[in-house]
Length: 247
Image (cartoon, rainbow, N blue to C red; front, top):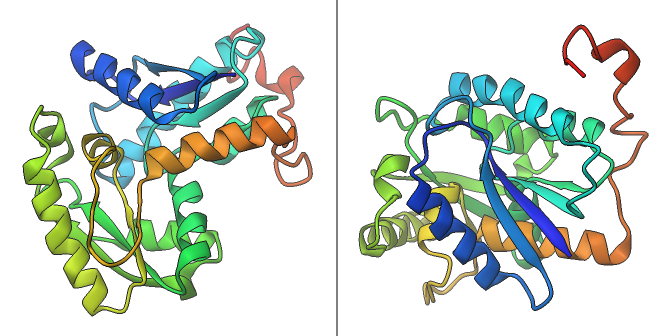
């Protein structure tokens, strides 16, 4: 099985991409190979709604250009906001997995209510409206206990030492428990990568969206499950080619 982990945007250091590929393959089962690639166009990191939207066009163009390669069995969109997930599913004939969607649904399987641990938005603002809106779209808003924040910007998590991320996440998890969460989801892929092998020991399940996405992707391929063409109709390439995309 071959899975692509596709990072929206551009500018992540090569050594960080290589480190992420090593981490993803360490989490995959034997026989699964995961390739990590960056789209190569778009924002450096996604910490605001505008950065999320600006990442989607280049992401879809990247997928369109390679949709006939038949190289991968599944694709994971490498951002905890799942940017462009629905459109990518319309575009591709293989499973397209969103880490946030995977993690939120898994959290609902182990707890009645869950919290999300998130970085602050651009400018250091503790804003959760876009995240709450995404959870509402999934019909899970009644299961959300709270959104808690860490102080570190995303790019500051690209370091060799995970201790600062872990310490801040543990403080946020304590607040989540006080707000009634029975489980927590790490709401950032940089946080997820930095803590991929952390044994949390915090009294409630901690759902890592990277692990969740990998295991969901493997399961979908095993079971032969593809996104529904009722919910995600195949893209009208006759209309798109020459207008939106160039063949």
